[in-house]
Length: 531
Image (cartoon, rainbow, N blue to C red):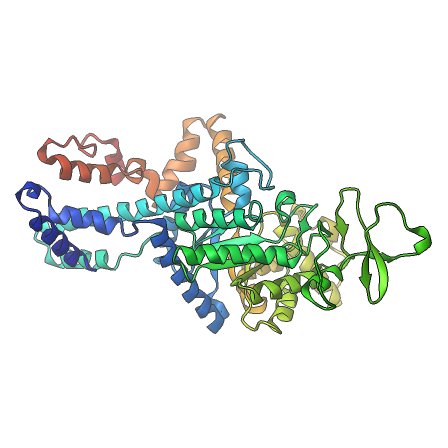
């Protein structure tokens, strides 16, 4: 509906209610409606799921159409990210939000900072989704509010050209509300617990939920040791639970991202149930590290399985966990991914130990032999040492080509001594094109960085503390922050406006008329930033 049509709709509603509503301005009511396009989280989930489905189809047609996101741990961070994207690129197309369970645990738990082990309150996850979308909706309201003010000025000046331009821009306004891929960890319990939490996350606005195949009460960060996976059927129960949650809430095209941690997980808590040779449980058990049983050496408490007509004893640790055979990680990942896609998942996530296009692409090619349109969400993780990894990849490639590598020490390539070398330049170029290359060669539809704003907040705060509490004093803030905000056009330099002061003034005028006590008068120091 156009802005003009919304005014007409509000005018009709107000007129139908008679004289007692005579003080209500139809145009102001229309502005409020336009500024709040999304009424509920479910409105957002339905809207963004459609966007993601369209983006997935576009990627299938051309891998250059990959999508991206950054992990955000606060609504303000997500808001500023999307404002920056609109400022620099003019569109939010292909740009999402990512909600990291790691950052919820580390930054949003009432217990204080926690490791990424699902110990934080599960309700803090939907709460953060709701917070992110509250800030994004406020960004819409703020931007449209400034456009309405410009429209009023143009009308008051009799500027017909700008009036028509602004009306068109209001009708064509692109929302800051974008899809979010939200981390439900390993489901926070059994399948019923997963279903209940999934509903809360969807109601908050999430159109895409990412779930991993670790044991829920043994959950670890994907880049730490000690990960324990579950048999496929346990994981598929949770995928089905999430799908039921989407369907119950009317988000029929909601997206499930199935993550496998099998590449780095060498342990399982259970032996899978198997009815017959070759079924899914049998395939899972085939990866167990077993010894053939000598009946003369059976010990108390041993567990046995049959394999190819032989009685085998799986290697069982004092922790009561079972061990997989070494070197089976990639095979287990491929089986996990195929199984998840065949049973309702839409996208895959393979947690790797390094960012290596050939390694990821090798697994995806095997998956695509069974599921031709399989595609990944991939974690461009800050846990990787990107500089060292890519310098070593270039080193290995050049050595394989027969180049003289005597000037380089592979183990010390992180050293600043190599920063100006040809090897470092080639590594940086491979890092620069990693997303494009991996989208084309490794089936990666969505590239995200899980924890970037955690690191940028730490870095910028360190820089400010060093300057402000040092010799620079106030100049540390002015030169290092405020002057840059002004010259780089950072919207929140006018922090009162960003916090909603102008929106509040518009509402005060609508509610109180000439009696409104507005904050944005000539004495407002924010006016200093208009120069």
